[in-house]
Length: 82
Image 1: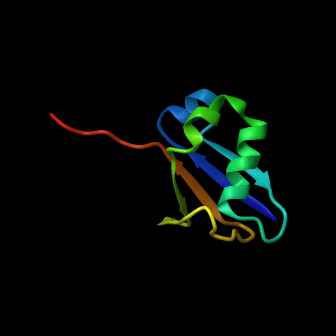
Image 2: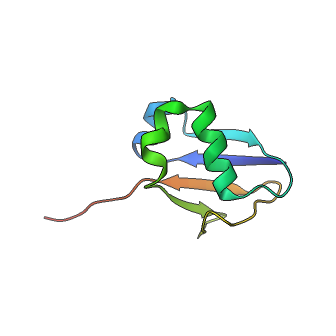
């Protein structure tokens, strides 16, 4: 199944793209997607554990099962303050 992955903040700079498409096996989870990203783009491995993941604009846990055409957003933690 094909899913699109949108990359925010410094992630798109590390990879050089704002969006990538991944072919995932049926029944794959968000955790599986993170694993595939780490093998294809090792430069983001140090950040993967801190990323928030949203599927179709809803925050999801790593166990969430993906479906054909899902849009996954990987969002680094945001710090705010004065």
